[in-house]
Image (cartoon, rainbow, N blue to C red; front, side, top):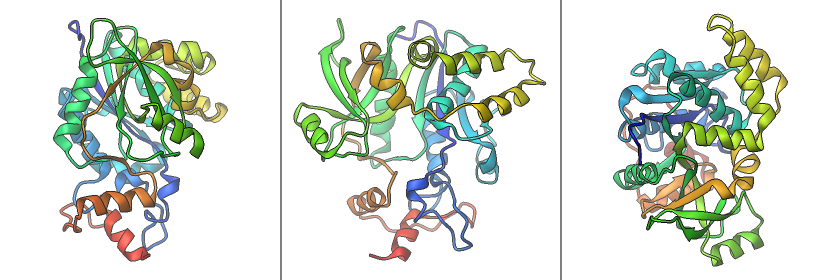
Length: 317
């Protein structure tokens, strides 16, 4: 359903990874954001996400959002990207701002573009199936709706968002309308959501730039207006405007502040089994490694790259 639109891949890599800090603090006591660590050695999670995006969209249309104070970690990994495709946030102000800043940059270049959003702290045991799931989500994109990739749950997780699928979208077999979206429910609610056929929210999102901006217009209009005003500044003055903007805004979570309230405009496509994991906590990292029975691999990457599997072993029980 692309209708001749270009498709951009947006890799989110500006988070701080606070919950994984017990594994991502190096021996010098420095916290390394989890997306710049490796799971078992070799490429970082951020590098994996960039490669994942390149397998779904044209390489020149891969965009990433990164944090200014993490430059030492990401600068060596974005060499293949056009400089204008590396969007630098002055501060972390939550996922809503982290998506909106690069979204407006893409809109300025191509208002009719489609976009697929990829977090940089995820892992798929079957990478080909995960990439296929992204492509399928793009195929399901409607010009006025945003598609979410849902994951079949194996436990009533309270740290994930949950998507309850509704009726099939007219004329399509797989995309279904979202009946309910619940971000990080309590234990009782998570069990009820699982019993109702709920899916985990993978935070793999797809839609047109216009459909994403419409969600902001409906649910975070002041944030959208502030960012749009900053984009009106000349290219020479824009960084200073954005810097001032980030000083004045609060943190907003895209799932809680947008998706929970936007269900009439959301579709969900269930992903096939691909061993997907959001590596957000030490427990999930441990489960992922146990499931793969994986050994730590020798790292061909930077010597300073922190390997989560080795950090988990060093931490002990």
